[in-house]
Length: 329
Ligand code: UT7
Image 1 (cartoon, rainbow, N blue to C red):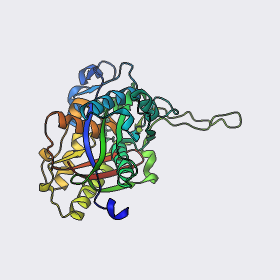
Image 2: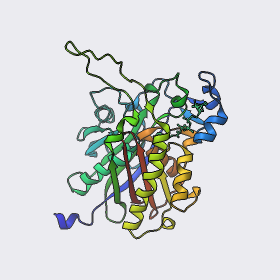
Image 3: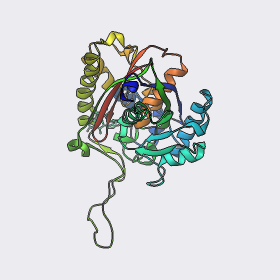
Image 4: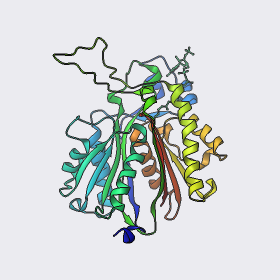
């Protein structure tokens, strides 16, 4: 079995995305906190974001899932596994993935959520890849979905301008000539408290901490900026070197869409130009685990990726976590 599976790759059968209809511009934000379009756009590249008017994280995935099943003519009963990367699930339990499984009618799939913040989709694809390569599971739905607007402090101008809502996903299945080729995955828990959200202290009949929970997203912006600009170029370089490729062999690097200034520094360090990177942070803001699959779906809808192209996706964020995947489309 091992020999048979040696050539097996996890192919990306289809990608798609869904964002809520409601668009909030930088000017709209300047009516609720002291900020302006010039500050937000020049520091981050963000101009608009889509915010939920009520749809929750599972509902975004369900929309993406319906599109993936329909465009690949796949029966819901044929899906073996569903993984949702999110830090903003509808409930602590049931998992978002189980809600999605139920709603899509994937009665033969098992389903679970995965928490790795902005690296969520890269992590989830890595997990799906191992399940597919084992030979035991054939069709896996992998989502990154977030309703970050639920955990943003709308009175804090330093964070509320950065984030957006939405989901993206992929249907992956065994492939012999394309798919996931290599990955470079990391965590650094000792710096975890540099980016937090949704703290749940022990508060019960025998414990009553003095401090309140930090319910909202909080981060040391400068530290995260430095972390991202240090780790991402290194991670991408590792994949290139290990696979005897140069950056010129890669059609697109698709980074987590946090901030276009981070990507500018990454481009410089990789000795390449901004047009090597797909960027849509201007339209969607930072959607954490959803940003890479939204970008892939967005690129696919524009016909930017062709069969045979090499793509590198690279995520970084809360955990701290980071990771990159080399994919032959
Ligand atoms: O998924 C990973 C997510 N993390 C990231 O992407 C974060 C990476 N970090 C960054 O991109 C940048 O650190 C930020 C964009 C978050 C902030 O940029 P910065 O250049 O590091 O700004 P800063 O936090 O040092 O703030 C500079 C000034 C401050 O004013 P003073 O103290 O200099 O008077 C802030 O109060 O800008 C002020 N400021 C704002 N002004 C207008 C902070 N937020 C805003 C705002 N509008 N929205």
